[in-house]
Image 1: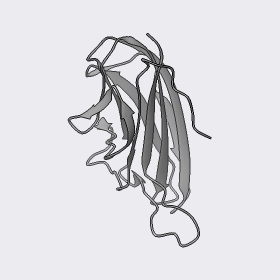
Image 2: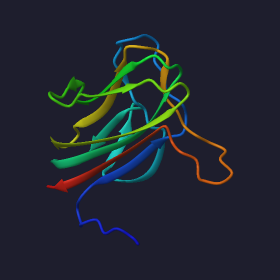
Image 3: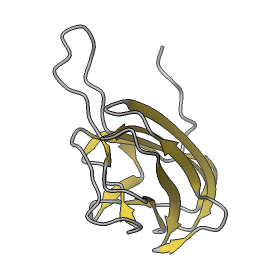
Length: 156
């Protein structure tokens, strides 16, 4: 099945096939995609900025693969920045305590953007013993990226 995108609406899909970690606790860190899967009018700039070419109302969805390095409880926070400023009421928190376990996270946001605006997904945690981890080399299934983000323009 091939999805139909309305004429004139922008979109993108990017992923990251490498692990992502923190340097220090409670330090806001951009989640960085690395690979372009598809893109029309939305570009990846400066490693983490999803920049739109035209004004409109957009949906931003993200899927992340969270890994815990110990059984102690860790709080992990995710939120959106627009133009470098935190967007109010977008923080989501996940508590993870599975030693060596993988926790899939799904996030969805809607946001109005002007032409040349950009959004970024940020994260922080109260422990450095947590990461976004790619799963590779599975003989029975495709690889799993550490991060997958999609941006779809819903209306002009």
